[in-house]
Length: 458
Ligand code: ATP
Ligand code: MN
Image (cartoon, rainbow, N blue to C red):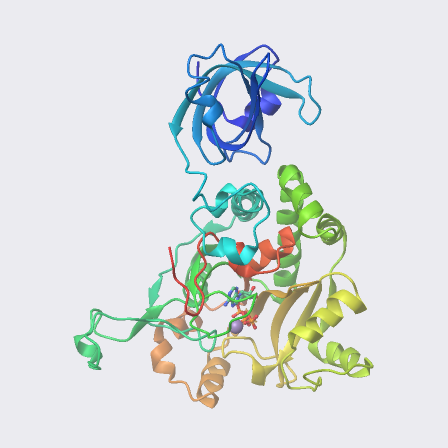
């Protein structure tokens, strides 16, 4: 008899089958009296549901062990799958054997069977995956990861691993973590491990462009680091980013890809994570399923930055940051557009060149660049992308006007010297996407072990 996952026992196994499962006890109810009986619910992480196990004194260790089980104990159960006479679950297992693998001190176990605050659970990040919420997040995160690979691979994109330690800073993407083996106080980078200043990557984009300009379509999916001291519910110091890059494409192709991509991953979790999504909808955010269905079915709004500014200026509002052409679109503006004006995702294009990085393609008006941000309700910016400047002379003069030294980017400029092509791509913040998908409100709760200012425990 092979060990089975509870998700399979609950969905794929005929009544009467002998089964063996292994997991952690969620609850125990011991009935004493004439016909003693114990109901043990077990979860093994394979799905949201628990499996009910019924144990009786015919088990040799019933009195010595089974009745002493508590929340958190690990057990292996062998028995027969039967229809459950009780309400609440269609099937249960009549135990022939219950092996206690690990006891769990009920006095000190931090994850008692009751509701805990997310703040408390952050201090128990090693045990919080045993709760309903964090188990569901982990499964949705995993399913979304697979959906991301499926989406790109089925469209001919090649998965690319870009370096985690880099010398390029993708100009302005965020503050960087220095990587060094120098002793504190030493400043001679010649003597440093790499013989130069290095940092953790803030984006794999520049390297992805090199591969797109050879393989046509590539994507990265990996960790990204930003030392920005922004203690917000939407920023992490270490987060995961998905960065596709396509050659022979323009900004419209880029926006089309972003829209199709978001729809695919949300559709996938609606289909494959039904139980987890129903849990989020019931306990975390009562509109989350509807919001996702709305995104999957809707046609995203597309409008220029200039038009968006007009809408914002006309809105009769007390803004914290009054909208003004040339200034960045703030979170309050993003939410106004996606939640109040359109009630669906909005793609804003063609931002002022002055607020965007050097690599974005300059439009014919000379003032704006071919940038796009995808904004969604509740979160705001979830994707940032652009068509890249493919004209060598324009790119060099833009770098110079920003005070950058083109020699530092010699290899990036080579891509424009030798067989340059129009190309475009974007970056999707994976955790922001999970926030949107689950209805969770703090980004620290959708990555297993968050890294934020003054917090790197575990
Ligand atoms: P923001 O203005 O919200 O800080 P950004 O403009 O710095 O975002 P980009 O440099 O365009 O963001 O990065 C691409 C995507 O990565 C963003 O759309 C967002 O989803 C995500 N992202 C950026 N910074 C962080 C962070 N510190 N933590 C988690 N996700 C992030
Ligand atoms: Mn940022």
